[in-house]
Amino acid sequence: MENWEKIVSAIIIGALVIFALPRLKQLLAQEKQENEEKDWKGFIFPIALVVIFVIILIMAVR
Amino acid sequence: MYNSQSTVTRPSESVLTTNKLVKNTYILLSMTVLFSGVIGYFVMQAGLPYPGFVVYLVGVIGLFMLTRWLRNSAMGILAVFALTGFLGYIAGTALAPLLQVANGADVILYAFGGTGVIFLGLSAYALTTRKSFNFLGGFLFAGILILLVATVANFFLELTAISLAISSVAILIFSGYILYDTSRMVHGHETNYITATVNLYINIWMLFMNLVNLLMMLSGND
Image 1 (cartoon, helix red, strand yellow):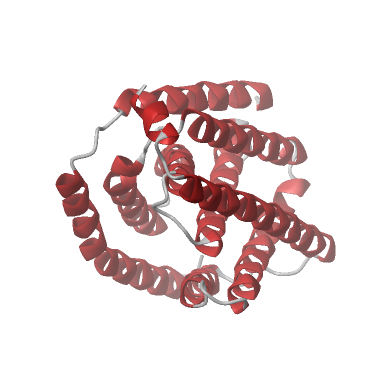
Image 2 (image 1 turned 45 degrees about the horizontal axis):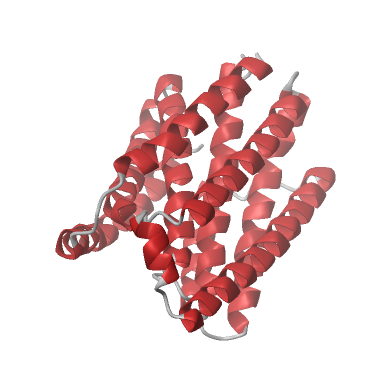
C-alpha cells in the first residue's frame, strides 16, 4: 500500500470511528435501560465451538 | 424455559411476520452470495485489478449507506446487489494472487467450507434456541471500533502478529454478529429484509476474508 493510500485510509477510518462513537454510547445506554437478561453462557458456548472448529481448520491446512 | 413460553404467547400475526422476514432474508441472501461468487469468479478468471484500499473503503461505505437509504423501496434490492457485487469484485481481486501460491487453492476452499459451516451452525443455533442476543449490540460494536483502530495502526506498523490478532478477533466478532443479527430477526427487532440481508452478507464476507487471511498466515504462506 502506498503512503498516501495509508494516510487517506487512516483519515476515512478515523472519521468513521468518530462518527460511530455516539451510536456506541446510544447502544450501551439502550441496553442498560432495557435491563434484558444477559445470557453470556448461551453466547460463549457457540463461540467456543467456532474457536475449536477454526483450530481444526488451521491444523488441516498446515 | 422462559424463551419457549414467550414464543408460545406471541401473537400468531407476529410469528407469521417473523417467518416471512426470515424466509425473504435467506432467499435474498442466497441470491446475493451466489451473485457475488459469480462476480468474484469472473474477476479471478479475467485477472481484473484490485482498485486500491481507498476505493474499496469509499465503495463499501457509499453502497452500504445507499442500501440503508433505499431499504424501504424496490430499488433497495438493486442497491444490495450493487454492494454484494462490489464485495465479490474485491474478494476476487484479493483471492486471485493466492491461487499462485502453493496451498493457496486449498486454503480458499477450506475457508469457504469453514465459513459455510460456521454460518449455518450459528444461524441454526440462534433460530432453534430462540435465545435473545440483543444484549451483545454494544459489546460487538465496540469490538468493531477497536478492530478498525488496530487496522489503522497496522497500516503503519505492518506487523504480522497484529494482522493475525486482527483476523482472529474479527472471526469471533463476526461470528457473534451472526448470532446477534439472526436473533434480532427472530425477536422482531429487525423488520426489514433488505437491512437483514446486508447485515448477514457482510458478516459472511468478513468471516470468509478473515478466515482466508488467518489460514494463509498459519499455513506458512503469507
